Structures are given as C-alpha cells and as structure tokens.
Length: 483
Image 1 (spheres, one colour):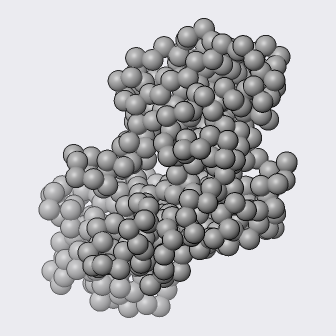
Image 2 (image 1 turned 180 degrees about the horizontal axis):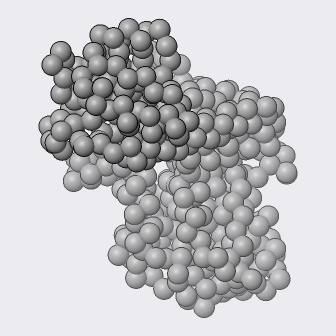
Image 3 (image 1 turned 180 degrees about the vertical axis):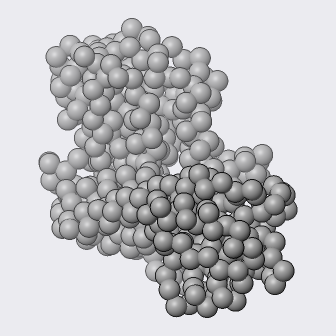
C-alpha cells in the first residue's frame, strides 16, 4: 500500500513513517500542500493522511482540491481536537476517517486495515453484481427464462437495492418483458406447463388435500417477490422452504388477479361463469368452493378469512380446525392505496423504501409465523407493484375506468407516450368490459389530457399496480413443509 502523508511538521513524524515502512508500507511524507498536490498528479496513492491545521491551507481545503483530481481516493484527516463542526465538514466531502493527535502508528494501522476490508468488500460486491448481470443476460426468451430473470432481478434487489447497474437492468428488462408477454400471452394461457396464478390450487394444493393433508394458505395482497425473499429469512427452521416464481394475470389488479387465484380460471372464464363477481372481491370463498368441486373435492371443511388490520393479524390464532384454511392479509393493499390519498400515511410513506420497511416491520411485529402449526403452508400474493416514473397522457370518455396503470374504455386515445393497447381481450384471458384496454408498461402511469402537468407532478413517484412489468406479474409462491 502506498501512502502520502501531508503535515507541515512532517520531520517530527519520521519515527511513525519508519514504523509503517517496517510493516511493508511505502510512505511519502510531505510538508506543503502544493507539493502534495503535485505528487498526487504524478503518482498513484492508495490513501492520503492529511493534517487539519496547516499554515498554508486547512486540511479540508486540501481535501476539496485533491477530490477534484481523484474523487475516489480515501482521505484520513488528522486533527488536534475532536471538533463536531470539523467532523461534519469532513464527512460532507467524503473523508474516509479521522484521527485525533497525538497519533500512534497502531491507530494508523487500524485505519489502513479498515480500508483494506472495505476494498475487499467492494471487490466482492462488484463480483456479485457482475455475476447477477451475466446470469441475467445469458438467459433466453422462453417463459422459464423470464421467470428465472425475474428471480435473479429480485435477489439482486434484495442484496444491492441502490446499485446503478441494477436500476438500469430493471428498467430495460421490464420493458422487454412487457413486449414479450403481450406477444406470447395468448399461447401461454393455453400451455398446461406454464405456472399461472390460477393454477396454484389445482397443481399445488388439491393433490395434498386428496391425500387427506391439512393445508394453510396465506395470500398477501400487493406483495412483491423481493418482499417474499425477505420474509423467507424469518421462516422457522422446522420447515423446509421452497420459493419459486409464477405468473400473475393482467390487469395486475386485485379484482382480476385474486378472483382468478381462487376460481382456478382466467378472469375471462371467471366472469363468464359468475357474471358480475369480478367487480369486487366479495365472492372468494364461493369461487374456491367451485374450484374444489371441479377438482373432485367435496364436503371438505373449509375456512376462509380476510384480515384487514394489523391488530387482527396479531390476534389471529390461525387454528380453526379446517382441512383447508385460507387467510387473505388485505391491509397491505389498503395501506398502499391510502398512501396516495390525503391521509397521515402520505407523510409516513414517502417512497418505495418506506413502504417496504413498513411492510417488513408489520410482518416482524405480528409474529404470525410462530402461530402456524400445520405440515403444509403456502404463502403467495395476487400481484406486485411498481413506482411510477413517467406519465403517459391519454384521452377517454366518461365510461373509462379508474386506475393509474390500466384503463378500460370505448374511446381511449394516447396523446403523449405509448401504452399497451388491447382490443381482443378474450385472447388475454380478460373479460370484454369495453372495446379497449390500455395497460401501462415499465414504470409508466396514466394521466388525462386535462391539466396533465398538475397530475404528472401529483402522481410521479407514487406506488401503483395494474400494469405490465416484471415487478407486478412475476410473483412468489412460497411452499413450507414441516418435518
């Protein structure tokens, strides 16, 4: 390691320099800031030690100058006193560390070891990021590839949420996914192998019920794959855990996706068999009962409950003696929508990170996992969510439905930006509610032509679902088995 040490009394520090050199370090001592700046132009250093108080310029001023030349070089500030203002100023220009005089060589060695550890950590982080990037871009364009791409992106999001390369990949892959799913969804819906949300009961749960097993199902409304990865870290060790990605339906809205989950059919077929039931989520138990009978499960003891508050989640026993118990944890979606309204939550949840942290806190404090005591547990969701970044200006008549990521309407027209436009809704498993359906892709959101500037500002940065993105459509299925 090569060190530049700047101090106007450097001659008195020669014993320290000799000790550091005996430890295998190369140290160049300089007594004037201008000399140090010249050396830094000509030679590369791993770290610079800087005295705070010098007659020519202060250590902070020198640090500012050196950072213009080498923004990433670590600086260690050496001061006479532990002054808060000095420390704050040092941190504001990204000083790596500081030491208080009189400095002992062992203190310098400790700082250098810390620097080495940070460098190793950075190199390790860089390797992990490149591994994620290479895995992501080595995959093809089949449905299994896209589920795997989603899984890789979500794991990357959990490990390095602020990584710039991740942010770029999320945006580009989400747009690629939107194009791919719209081109291929009609054929994918007819493929028995594709794991859609409406196949979960038939493929995963009903075989267990046929073997007389008890099963508990938890459905977290508006719950993303990365949140499920966090949750999986808290699963009791007595359970064997498997988490896999599956596809939700479009629009990725509760009345379509969750009704589809319970019915075992696409939204189109669910509506055809039970007209009007897709307007809300008031018939989930009846839809599940129909699903069970279709799959030759009759006279089964069934318990279905919606949990709409944190207190209700904390108080729930999860023990009702039924062969199949299903709990819909509904208040995440309520929190999500209240955040967009004029409520105290608007100040509490300012961004996506706040929402993630609040959901995590709720799950940790509820201790619901400790109460589950059956052999087979499934945890899933109906859809994920995204942060709105770009407005698409549209025009529509009075018949157009509400929603910032999807719109049904007979006279919809895009004015600025490009939404996904569907007319043959049946091919996508969607009931023909209107002549057209507009879906937002990537991180877009819809605003109307009347005063678009006002609504662009109002809704930019909000959290939404209903559109087409990896985050909304590739959802988690957690399978737990005790013993």
